[in-house]
Length: 243
Image (cartoon, rainbow, N blue to C red; front, side, top):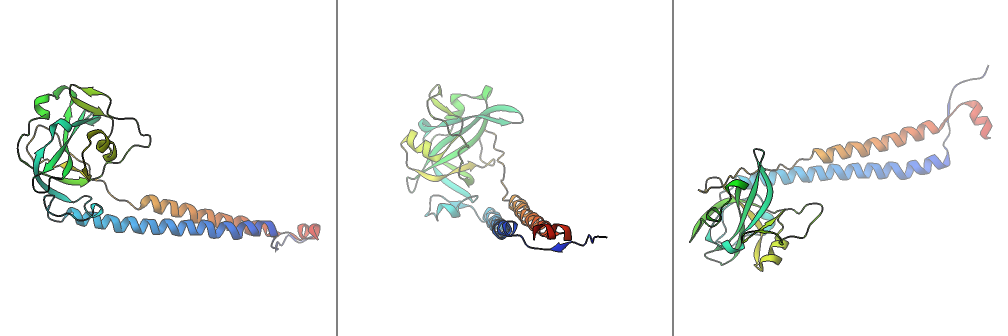
């Protein structure tokens, strides 16, 4: 009778792969856990900002990175001739536009873009676009618009005198308008009177994606170890055949 007891015998090539891949996969898993912790810290910081008193844009401002999601109040007058429409924005399944108009601040003369809200296609009118004359007070929350994965050329189509764009980026707007705008945009509050719909989503910073990636990398490291261990087990017949 022959024994079926397996013997542990390290092989060179599987061991080389194991030594390279297990630390690599483990390191990537640890890096993803670190990214998850950063996201948690960022989320706490952003939620704390939302609870702070409204910041006046007419006063001296901190760095723009510290302003994201802050509630603000600003006093100035709209530069209506530089208004743009962000098209194909939907509310309750109905298509329409977001109306973006620059506001020139009264005290500093700086210019900030204001997303004044949504209006349906069939309710669009020049009267609605230019309804705010003189000095106005705007309340809202600061955000930074992000470009899509594939950027298109903007600013060449128009309805009457108002350009329509598929999306907004600050760099595109600066180039088109020639204005030196602040490096963020304000989502105007629903509490301000207007004919626009203002139901802004509140993005949440989540760590779940990074946790999922970390589990995936640790699983790869474990699978690599198990494969290496299995390849290192041999029956006596296999051991004798290789000697």
